Image (tube, rainbow over all chains, first blue to last red; front, side, top):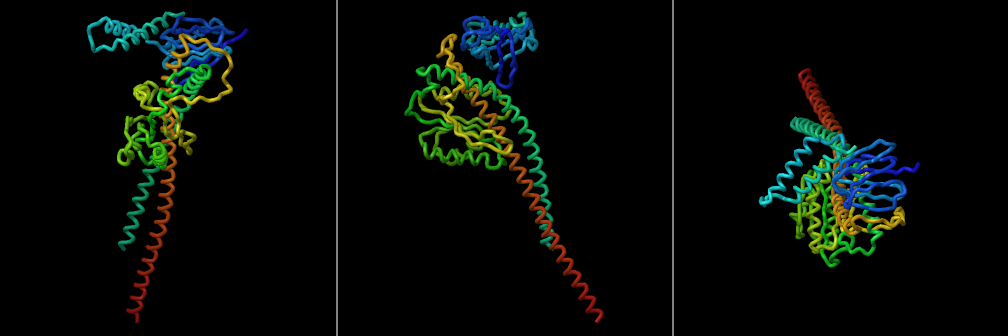
Length: 134
Length: 285
């Protein structure tokens, strides 16, 4: 059976480099699946869960931003920060979600950088969703 | 007698200098290993980002994105000069400064940014060029995130259309004993004719321009980061070599001084014996 060659690279490490069956990626315009023979494309990532499957076994990561290239059955995922599912601290993620929500709710406070609060909320949600992913 | 004592103190001080340079050499060697690992670890990511941007550049020839085609061809040049904060690393800084001075003579319409204190110290005293930023303390613990502010500032300068190009002068890490002085054009990105880029047409999500925008920022960020890491590793390598040479020279000097010292001591003893012998002779007679 045909396989995908998947590389998952962050700035100071190559997290994955191998042959897999299927990759599911959170693109800016929605999640999508990559299978062998996919047409070439390049996309930006949004915070979310990336799942890389080989013979029923999943590798699950939470990515925050980055890019994906698919070309000739090569899938290259570049992201600035990326955590493996088992490295995510659920309590910390919940806490940072609550903190971000509180900040966003505080509409009248001019000291709050809403864009930053929003992106940290997105990241926290992405982490929590990654924990639920099976 | 005074001469002998002087020599002895001198030998003593050279010995302690040799000890210090030897210790510095060892410290540099340990740091070099760390910085070298950081450089090697950073390469895959920066190479991939670089290649990806080139693919986009090649496939979108007519995209007039400012990071790919200069906004203002008549503008000034912005030169980033990368040196170390500390000295005692041989010709590491002086070669950069010498090169920069020559380059600026040919391109006087330039502004400067400094990574590392040494370059700034030199140009602050000796030049009329405008300094747009100084960033000391960029050690090998820098992460991509920590360079983000520098990137943002740099892009603001560039996007203000005051500058035509951004160049970096830095030492690239070749090996522990070899550094390569490089002049690199950072912005706009230099296109290259790669044959490893497939002819396939890509689909873009959301669209090519948006990806070039984001990827371009990431490219500048990662390049700055990589340049800092390279320069750090090169600095430690240069320091290790310089300190090794210093230790060897000190040892040679100790040997030379010991020889003079012993010779001097010998001749003093000889003189003393002659004096005693001739004294004894005089009494005898």
